[in-house]
Length: 151
Image 1: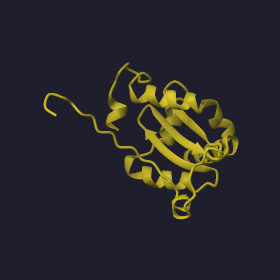
Image 2: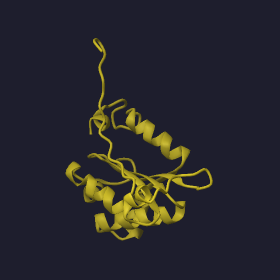
Image 3: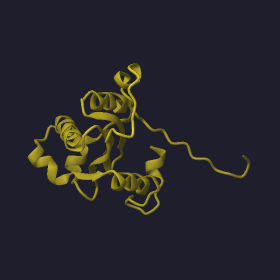
Image 4: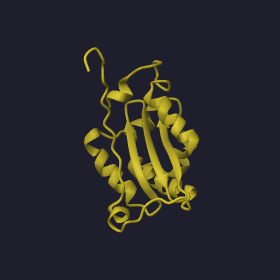
């Protein structure tokens, strides 16, 4: 449309083939959790964020690794200079968080005792609200900055 600016966002998601291939889907009686887990400029020093930095070319591999865990059903990854955030759908909240923390420890080379104080963790509605705040620039170092959307 003329006179309008459109914004295109690339999102990396996974739905494991084991779920699609067997016809297993989500049902009302299946309790899943939406999880946001990661580090930000507010929660972690540069030294920790650098260890978790993920180049765009590596994101599909990261998602594949995350979705290979039995309790992580879906994943999306946001990696910028100021944050690494994992947006996950977990079959069970606590086990999914434990598996995601395990991946973060492996990726950073840090033991969980050193990494955990720098992690943020949000669940369900709070995780979705955080994702929308990040996408709209409300969580950026400069309010309203569009860098996240372009990445």
